[in-house]
Image (cartoon, rainbow, N blue to C red; front, top):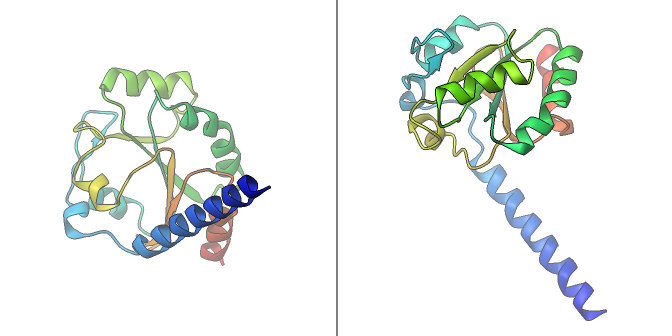
Length: 172
C-alpha cells in the first residue's frame, strides 16, 4: 500500500513540475532570430519563417513538427488528418526534423501528405528556430493566430482538447 501511495505522489509531483514548466515557458510570439531563420521547402528554396508567416497572414496556422522516423509522429498522422478535415479554414504547415532530405520527401509520399505545405530543417533538430521555441519532443503542434502570434505554444498530440479549443476561439 505504501509503495502505491509513493508512486502516486511521485507521479503527481512530476505532472505538476511538467505543467509548471510548460506554462512558464510558453511564448506568444517569435523572436527576431526565429523569424529570420531559413527553412528548406519542397523546391529546395529557403524562405525565412517570417516570410512563411507573411504568406499566411490572416489565416489560422497549425504547425506540425514531425519526422519520418518518429513512430509517435506517424501514429498521429491519421488523427492530424481528421483534425484538418474538421477545420478546413486552418492552414497546416509541416516542419520536419528528418536528418536527410530523401527520408523527409519519402516520408511525405509514404504517409499521404503530398498535398500540404512542407518544410525541412536541413541543419537538423538543433537549430536557431527550434532552440528558440524549445523544441524538445516530436510530434509537437503549435497554433498561430491570424496575425502570426502563438495562440497555442505546445501540444504533443492532435487529440489534445486544447488544440480544438484554441482553433474554435480563433475562428470566432
